Amino acid sequence: MSTARLGTRRLVLASGALIAASALATAAAFVDYADVNVSLDGTRNTFDIRTAGSDSPTWEPTAADWEQGNPTAYEVSLRSGATLAPGGSLAVRIGAQNSSPSLAGLLSLTITDPQPRGNATDPRTGAYLELFDQLVFTVRQGSTVLFDHVPATALQTYRWAEPLPAGDDVVLDVLIELPSAVDNRWQGASTAVLFHFEAENS
Image (cartoon, rainbow, N blue to C red; front, side, top):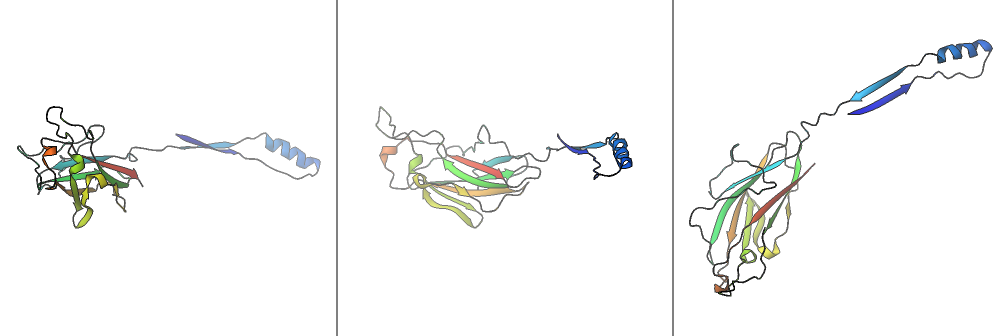
């Protein structure tokens, strides 16, 4: 709560006769002030984004699908038996929703490996453990291409040019490819992929 004091009314007189001085003394005995209390209601100033996703190519998010992705990431469960072999690909749909009551936000997307293992190898086989750096990503929002066959090592943050209005969402089609050139050195390698949405109110 902020309080703004408007102050005391003052009577200012120039020099004059005795009667004017008496009037000034009498008037000065009356003091008046007023306070203005400004209450800021923050209930509609909250800012929040939620996430959802599916490996179904026809998935469209419902109100029940959206979940908080912070501090624990929303996890997309792949179909049982889903694999990614050299020359193959996996498709998922992911989304972000601005669930704020009134604030719009500038959205960005960063694709990362949440648990990078670098060049670590299996001590038994000598094969690499980490697969993320071998992947190639294509991300589309409708007819707009955000990432076009971008290798994981060349990924950069994508930033939307226009704010996402309160209550609106974006749904993205993601294609994750493993090039056919990836050989047996990555036999049995694995990775997680983190799609990190971030928004700043505008």
